[in-house]
Length: 326
Image: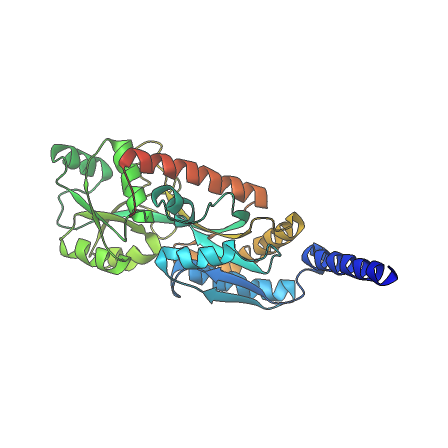
């Protein structure tokens, strides 16, 4: 009987210790390296911002913060990995707009951006720019809208793929302006830009950072940016809203999320440390030169609500435009 009691007590103590290890207080966090999973290949905006933030976090947290690129299946490989990770603050996901879009257009996405994850913070905003082939006889958004209405279904727009940021921005533009244009999806951004430059496709919505060199070289004509404020890279370029399509806004955002169930005190700690990181003047200047505005959410809950609003907005747009991924 005594031996049985000892076994029961030992088992209870083991469970308590395990629970205590799992519920590590933020005051002692982190006690080992933190991993930021980037679900895309190295070199893109999500990767570059994650690496810049990770360097600053390594200094402020006193532990190494590692960026782990897990590309594949349009971001699903890395996203699933983090969704299944322990909710202890040691595995985070660097995400972009598509994180909130894919579940509404792909039935086999395999994750819920609101139920499977907890928001940490936004990390940057990147406006897109509406660019056309220079041979197109338009020099403003109003002229483009007039031409598209005169030639319904004849003007084409390129994107890096169905459901991507460029595709959703263009469909939102169609919806606001009452247009019908032909979507030409590509397997990546590079070839899409090449075909707009060559005139194979009429136009596209592209991130300011990647189109800027072609605009400055005269290979693309920029008509407007998709944010509600002008881009520092092109201060003379109007926003789509200013150019006549009132209420239009579609801006790319990056952020960090953690597995659902991660303790709030850890989320708050990470939110505060990222806010300090993206406020460094030298870092902000470096990214502004690329058309990227570093920023942070006021709280983890604020970012969760931002993602929720994006999910609802894009799900509605996908339904109305009939956007589906097989």
